[in-house]
Image 1 (cartoon, rainbow, N blue to C red):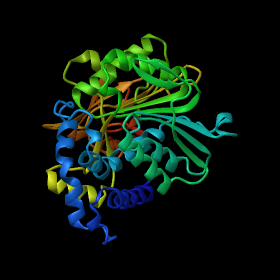
Image 2: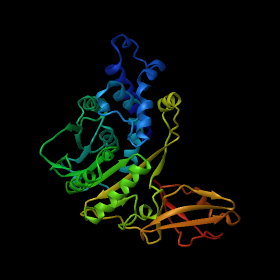
Image 3: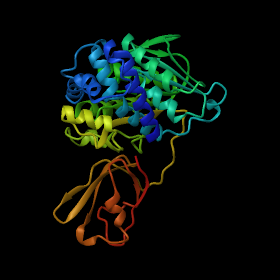
Image 4: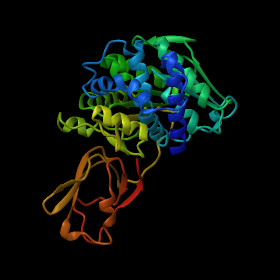
Length: 376
């Protein structure tokens, strides 16, 4: 992924200079710090808006060049990694439906085509067609330009509205796709629109990936959406949940929300913008849901399997973590500092998002073992 991220970064910088710089600034093909400052002007406002539940987000912000260019500079690389991490958790879509015409992907609210580009890089050796839905003409042009720079010739990308039927005021192609993705899009709709669009999308896709900012309000709404889709029997949850029961964290209290961290090697250009706007991106945060149509079989996991849904909670003399299991309830386990041993050293490696085995006891003793067999 790191090589793909670097290639994408170079393509974005080239596109920004070619498309958004004043004519007198075209002479120098090299990316400069002056270019960075020019395009980062809108990054601070967008970053604030995206972390404050969109309360100060300008209406139709993609209509303004300064916001489109800032979004390309600062957010595409981050969202590319988030989509890639979700693709890693999908059951392989490269069965019979991955042959012939190849994989078909629907990108809802595609913006600059970040999800499409991530799919193109992830499935680079396979035929791929991406159907993108995006209303803003300016950002559509950016998406097409980046696709032409990066996608291999056997991948197709098209903004299409045929054939369509509406769901919650949005458009969903009737054509069956292997993967549908809505990245940072559903939170722009009200809850009933989210539910209607998601249910309709699942009728026309094998797997639906939803990615949202890791904010309390948007994430708890995603948790509600998950429960509502299960109640409608619209699909089967594949990740992050290991069960098909109501979300126990949603019911536990109104303060918690199920979100995860992604370790990454932060690109230098992101660190430069961070310095200008006062942010820090040593890791990425996201909330997500991977849900399959009921025809797609859920992966079988053992009964003693748990998703880690908290960071380590360190207090005097012990360390605790909160788990969500395939039983559909939350459990807290801990280990006393005095019980640290060679046998249970894996406890110190546990991170939010990991899937672990061997936590049938609430307290880890000296001889207990925990296996971390899949990391987010």
